[in-house]
Image (cartoon, rainbow, N blue to C red; front, top):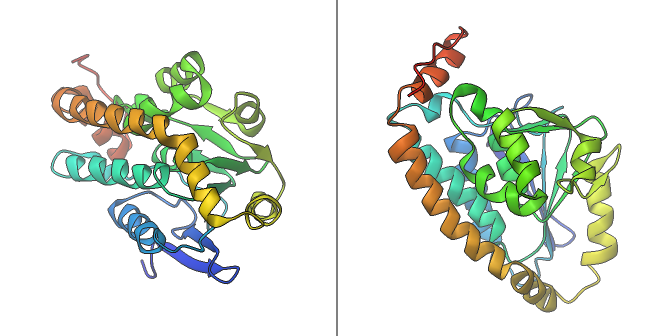
Amino acid sequence: MTGAPVAVHSEQDGRVLRLVLARPKANIVDHAMLTALRDALAEHREQTDLTAVLLCAEGPNFSFGASVEEHLPGQCEQMLRLMDGAVMSLLEYPVPVLVAVRGYCLGGGLEVACGGNLIFAAPDAVFGQPEIQLAVFAPAGSCLLPELIGQARAEDLLFSGRNIKAEEALRIGLVYRLDEDPEAAAREYIENHLLPRSTFALRQAVTAARAGFVARMRERFALVETQYLGQLMAGQDAVEGLRAFIEKRPARWNNR
């Protein structure tokens, strides 16, 4: 595997930061990708003329999800804290983060996308939190989705592990806009609605709009992280589900 897991581009004379998940075709979210994403965001955070971030992905899919191997005992704690840290970096970012999604956006990939402000998606995009199928759950997704799409719709996705198409994602408010070229649509939004604004005022607006939401997410992330590591991973089925997926065999549940 060569090249950085996240490609970083400064555009519009430094006013737009474009971050590209660069592990096609699956763009598996792993330690390296999360670290690169967090570091890129931190590097540009204090740039006073930065107006927007555009997060997209190379290849036909935004992301198939997080690394299953890195959720096994011995790596799980580091992986979970990296994931939560990267998503919190997006949630707390001082300028709008627009996300362009093509193809599959699943699991940890959806958790990352939900850290942004607006999701632009291709009509063939597919969204889902399939973690429950492996006898685990989506930590960040469990916190974010109830706020973004409502409790009942969030529980449907989190408990069933089913995927939804772009049209349904738009209808329930997960996606802001559908477009054959979601990256171009996000760029158009940036050019028409963000670049003309005072960056100082825009940062103030982002902070004001997200203050309560971010505070709730920080508290919820900590609680769910404790549950995931101290209860879920202490059981038998989580490890069995993860190992069965890696070994490509049916899982044998002990229901504990």
